[in-house]
Length: 426
Ligand SMILES: [Zn+2]
Image (tube, rainbow, N blue to C red; front, top):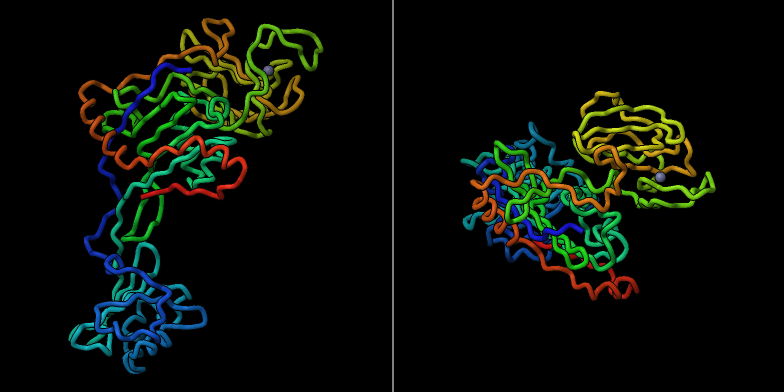
């Protein structure tokens, strides 16, 4: 296990596409789609009402229900026609109507939410209806998720509703510190702060992970995002250590170790005792195999019992080999430069293999070593001049961090008595 524990994060101004300054009116009022306008017209002398086009209904019916005359409805439809046929809005379209206190019969303004980032506004100006498209204002908020592992990291992320691509990103953040397949265990916990992108008050997408923590049997790894124009974007601990290490802890994103490194092992095919000088990862045929570090391909070629093999020279000290591949990554040849995490081939069973798996070897100065027992150096720490800024950023993100899950819950989850828990929070 790696010895260092606490990390940190950073803060950034989030850049998004042009944000118009118009304030979306839907942001000001509680949405209540259950309200039936025909039963409650007393509030119409208030300023606004939100409604939704129901299945089997249309704008005409909706406006008649709130007392707008047929003539006015025709004028509204006519004004909007160059932009949209409001007579054919799909069911579910949200509509915000406003009335002036001076005229409670005819709304002064109607807004139709066309999609998460645009509305069509029809309003009355000098007794004439006019229509225009209004862009929603985009902004980013932070959202937290907190998970507890009962079976696997993946399963825990799905249980709390962390989107799949963010679960993969979370495993990536810690990829050089923790092998989520091998090292995450029951009762391990994680929590994360992610960017949630809104157009006005409606969530329209996800951004990045900005802060993350993983409790691996009591050892806590923490990190936050920090970026500077002169640095590659990284996740750092609070004291400026980079989470990027020289090598990934696993050449597969998902896959489990089926046979570890040993000087003596009974060989399943040769039926003799023979050292196993690498690590076998069981994974389906075709699973992408990643270069564990930057380097140059020594060869990508058939090597007898090893089948299709890629060997990478990382520097004068380290080399790695990946065997039994079904195929090489397109364009990969001896002399190719590769970087950490790049796909170099795919799991297979070429050569002498009982089934699809990756046999992975690590060499230190030409000699086999057990990569799981070597504590490799980390990449460069954050330059000292940025540390104060990093810590401010880190603390800012961690303010949004949700509480840890209680590890006692494992028993409840395993017996299935607690039902699904969602800990996503704003
Ligand atoms: Zn092997």
